[in-house]
Length: 287
Image (cartoon, rainbow, N blue to C red; front, top):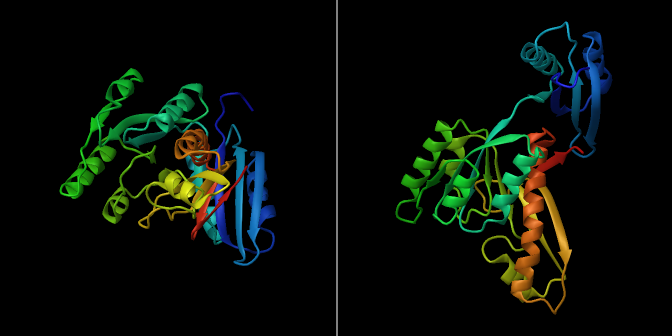
């Protein structure tokens, strides 16, 4: 294998049946592919099988795109759903943001360092606060004001922008607006949100204030896929920090923002690396 050779990563899910691991690995072996990594999980209650497998196709075989098409046909013959991605693919990412910039900067730093294998193609905001810093990153900034009166029109403008930039993934980096059913259906691609609490606790607005009023001893952050139900989408990553009665709301906000930036970046990285499989209201995240 050369340093620049593409690998294929596949996520499979479907009804559990005997011999699946052997069948999948045998298909790759028979085509002179080289398996780099493989992991699997079985939901014992639902009897559903999940697998993530990464391999290098044979150098003298089909081109990677054709190899993926052949593998999809094979997975279908096993009654398995499959998502495939080439290691050379750089997803196009749009960032929705309001005024808070900590998660926003973390995404750009991750892209620059190569930790996030993506291209941030645009930033869309309902405020103008981050316009100049966005331009300093060399990325287009679009201000789309949102109010109760103009929300349908604003979301239509946002959808047009996402189509114009051919966006694969939308990341809500503390975007302080709720996306409607119509927007999510119209976009039709994954949306990752960061919520500043350990869901399902303290969903909705002002979660740090809610946590302080409740006297919690742990605060957290949750990255999840956005769905029409507020803060209820499948969870990708969470983390917590211990607090005490001595901490003010301001203390919770400061500590929480450190959690938010890392939790969101980790969730986005796992998604980009094809490590997250959604089923029902859950996810399987392969390490």
